[in-house]
Image (cartoon, rainbow, N blue to C red; front, side, top):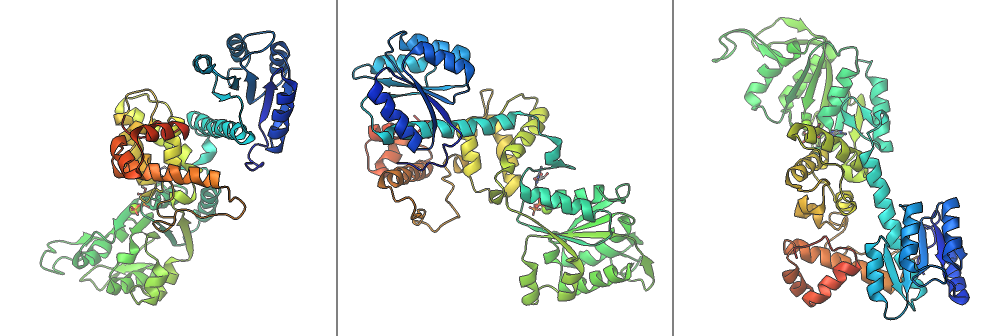
Length: 472
Ligand SMILES: Nc1ncnc2c1ncn2[C@@H]1O[C@H](COP(=O)(O)OP(=O)(O)OP(=O)(O)O)[C@@H](O)[C@H]1O
Ligand SMILES: [Mg+2]
């Protein structure tokens, strides 16, 4: 039987007039961790639903006092969010299908095993979880999840916001580390805008993008005649940023001989233009960023140790997006708003299946990649909600395991669950996802490499609720 923990907050109402069956269902559901109430006819069921909030109603298709279809309609009138699962006898599948059209969520054909029963309810739980997350998406982003232009809900990022608030008023240098696309530049700007320097310039320079020969003059300026092209005096970025903040992006790319000059500028608060002996006083706060492991660069002699310590007075690490998935829904909402407005669209939210893909994906390009993905999805979506069809294949078929484990070793068995049934199911889902990713969603080709019939693949897609995957 499945574990009992995840069901703790779910309340189920069982409606069946057959005493022994009802008792055994109640027992099995309680064992699986559900809260359960039971009644033997429709009238009692409807009056209970009016008094209490049930998550799931499990009812027999044939009840003594009301037919199943009318019961579903009345249930829905009272509580439109309740999930209804029908129990049907032999040969009543057509009725069950009609019931699903009327709003039942699923059906169980009698006789069913306790495992089948619990599995059906677990599917509903999963759907509910995604629906709630989606609701969150639709609600306006609370200001508390925003700091300057940075949107984030995770504890890790809330801690970053706190650090920035504390250090913004001081003139200390700050070193920001994090993978590409995690928001290092955005954070540097937030530091500036929350500091008393906000009225003065914020100047950014990418140390990796400027040829070494030009970098010194770019940073410190030059005097007329200092070199062939120096036809007049020129201020460097340190002087341009005077009173404000200078953002040295990709600081790890700075040539070693300039690292010495930068260290001197930071220590003495003055610079010398190229070709000039006279120092110029400067009042600049330096924020530097890198995606490199600077400590390692120090060990290898690529980066000066003294400069590293001078920059690293305060360091802030921006975690990769995959390590803060709680931020994904609020970021999606933020980017949808932003790009809807820009593109003149009004697409609302994402489907639960699309959200599941977005939450599962590894986002190696971090927030920049997520933003691009949402922008693209808005352009491609033909309906009023973003669905899986408009997500890139890499995101759509991601099984959430790439990058986490070695190829072929995606399965890590936890000793507490050695159920063959459970793991075979997970294995099949992964193989199907991988086959569809490999064949660009072509189900016929995917079935071939899975070595099953096309029909069997369709059946499994339905069984595992993956019907949105692949091209029909
Ligand atoms: N928390 C966030 N909220 C809203 N937008 C964000 C957030 N983090 C990043 N972005 C957006 O993602 C994009 C990438 O951010 P940014 O350029 O600051 O990253 P970076 O770490 O400097 O990347 P790189 O190392 O590639 O230069 C930008 O468009 C930025 O506005
Ligand atoms: Mg950057």
